[in-house]
Amino acid sequence: MTQLELAKAGVISPQMEVVAKAEGIEAETVRWGVAEGAIVIPANLRHSSLVPCGIGRGLHTKVNANIGTSSDYGDIDTELAKLRAAVESGADTVMDLSTGGDMPAVRRAIIEASSVPVGTVPIYQAGIQAVERHGAIVKMTADDLFATIEEHARDGVDFITVHCGVTRSAIARLKEQGRVTDVVSRGGAFLIGWMLQNERENPLYEYFDRLLELVKEYDVTLSLGDGMRPGSLADATDRAQLDELLTLGELVGRARQAGVQAMVEGPGHLPINQVETNVRLEKAICKGAPFYVLGPLVTDVAAGYDHITGAIGGAVAAAAGADFLCYVTPAEHLSLPDVEDVRQGVIASRIAAHAGDIAKGVKGAEEWDRRMSQARKKLDWEEQARLSLDPERSRQVHRKYVPAGSACSMCGEFCAMDLVERYLGIFATRC
Image (cartoon, rainbow, N blue to C red; front, side, top):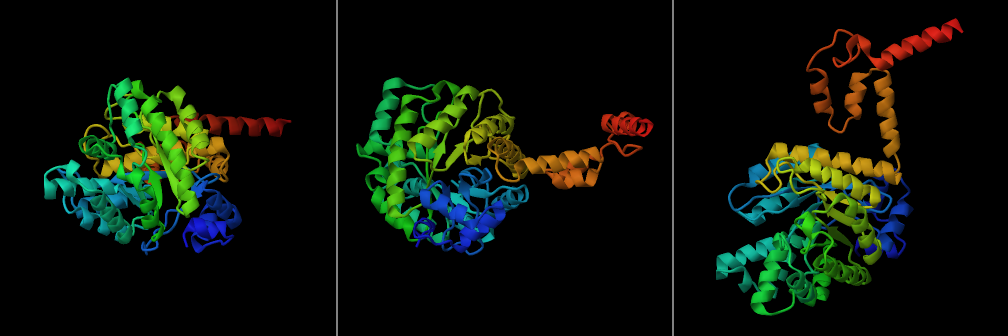
């Protein structure tokens, strides 16, 4: 039985117990959330090294790190180094988005080495293999695509992005309105090209029941992808995006009926004043399914700093109810991220996730900040480092200029808290 089927039957699984302990909440609360589809636990039955995590209502906002090769660069060693950097920096999940080299070997190595859930986008491999075997992505068959999905599931992938909502209807909307950046989703582009060339419906939508049957065997969670997500602020919240979202809402219901866990992916590039609206739309249309957002990026002009742009949007999204942030690195739009890019991307998104958790009142979030404030009041630098999102960075910065006293080198003997504490003490003694 899948996690969803167990939850509906009133059974608290070992995975639900692990999630409850990590979140500091009752296991029954987790079970209830899974049963309703408001929480997912991506946990492939074949991922033996997995420590499960939960994504969704009432839980800490989770962060995903994308790794993987490109057609120009990367191999197993580079991706395992990125995996280590992501996990050490606090990523809750990783996605292997490889499009070059020996993709199955890279994926299997990542799964074997990863204690966190691993996601993939199977159409990347299916499309690239169609080029290698037949000379073009558009010569891929539906059977080719489903065979690749089954391969990923059999390897132990915990969740897969599938662009089931890229339908002929959504393409018609796209054509009618036009866009500045058209389609920026690689998987969406593969499917759109295939659909237009073959004059057929998206096989992931047309044969959705086949997909459900396949992933259910391994309890793979569906991440219903946003192939029509906006790639610029000018295209945000348009008809093509919303057409796809309406379809995904329908498919969430079908997945739940089949006993398959599902979450929904979201934009993308959004003006900051549209972020909350997009979260509320997804939650309403998709029946409370966990929402997985890329950033979102709130400006298009921050090349080289898009981890900051994404963190701004991610904080707003998380505060509004988004459950899962896909990190954005400084390399976004520019190059394949390296190990340091991965670290910076994870930390930036973790800051955003935690800021959102404070706003949502997630258990333990505000208390974490209170403990940090108490350590700062005491000028306890090691405790401050320990409580930091990036302890080693905290230590490095503090030691950059070693102060003579207990304060930092910014204020030295004129530390505001130190001064006020002494004067308050003197005043209290006189009284």
